[in-house]
Image (cartoon, rainbow, N blue to C red; front, side, top):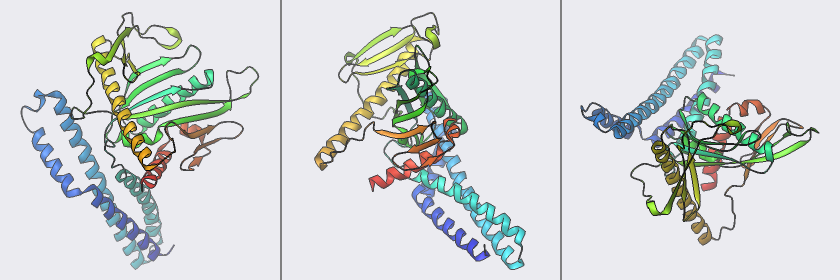
Length: 368
């Protein structure tokens, strides 16, 4: 490839970065960082631990984001200098080095560009994910556990903390349901495109005749709420049940009735938490999940009303969105974006960034 082609690629990267920098509004970001640093320096910051964690977490996020943008900008400037010098000196080795760097930059800039598409009301929040097994018996409960592992591995790859709230184990294999939080900025905006019905096709390990089995699992993603969010849940609308936590195979996790189940009577929404040792801690965690789900339900109802006013007859909530085929061939395919891969094991091991990025771009296209 001629050096002039490299320079053209660099100009394209430069233009994309300029657009990203405008969307992220770097001057405002720097001002917010300065303000947060002043708060962090206050001697009474940790008198309110919840606020202190919010301030320090927000500061760390913004600093990391700014460093990422500035680092990419510097690398683009550096590779341009490298190409220009190589062109002057007819240095093929330097051009080969530049080609590799340009490709790495292209990938990094594309990922950052996807981040700028997360501009929804709650996109920057942490996420609460619930996985439920559907039709398919033991294969479905096993598939639900496979999905839980997939998302845990994805979070691990990105160093995102995960907090498990509840796991309901199946009598045979796998799980009936699981709820967990991914505690990272923009986790909701990122993972919200994973919501929907997932379908698995494989030779069933639970079928003595070795037949193919199709099974389903549902993924729900809601944002973690903040104190400023308007969602009021009167105590008289909630039924509280306590029970003993259960583990795989029906074993008890502990010997006290510390697990808590909350039922919101008007909507029938049910959440459970058994992760903590204390009943009060479990109740508090369950309330976090309940409020998040009630807010998501409220937003869904508002969207449905708007769709009705617009004459939109399509019902897409919970529709099948991705197939995982392990037999007679190997393929994972997203039915919305058409993105696919034959490396099914990598996907189940948490390599789902390409699917997520394609989903975010698809969603933005649908909203346009």
